[in-house]
Image 1: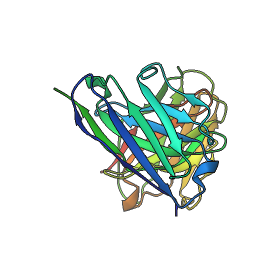
Image 2: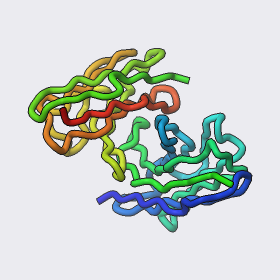
Image 3: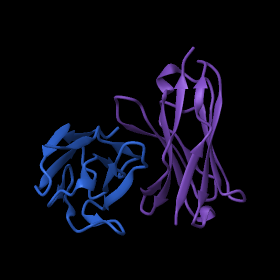
Length: 118
Length: 106
């Protein structure tokens, strides 16, 4: 069955970097676009990044553009999110998700908590 | 950005009763709307896509309707496992989510 397992969360100081991973199994990872989203405590869900199936096309909302980078290693069935210049507002549970055409998300991981605090 | 507004924030329902959850978009999203269920500590679960199509394995007591800017998720007879938070998501222009409706036991 489809499984997505995030890792790499933790406590980090403002201005520092962190890399999240999402290990995928149970499907042909190289055939799917993938997403990162986050859930800020007390607020809603926010889309953070999307990458095309082949890793070529990447898009971000303005809130993270220039600071976050999404990538996928199809040989390792793993999705990544490199987060730089972290701010306290980036504190959230981060989820990876798989795209089902035409662009909704059919499977999500359980999330990994990122806390940005001094 | 398309803003998604869900109502009510909390819905108190007795097991066996029905529940109606609403989601409104700030501009038309056609039928490009999905509903998700999330329980504490678990991954969100896709319930409905295309505003009204149930995802694989989703019980028939869940139904979605609407198009344009007004959408509804109906749970016909709540089971114990249905008490959770429900989110709507538009995927017509990028992706945005509602704030969620918590369905709690009355």
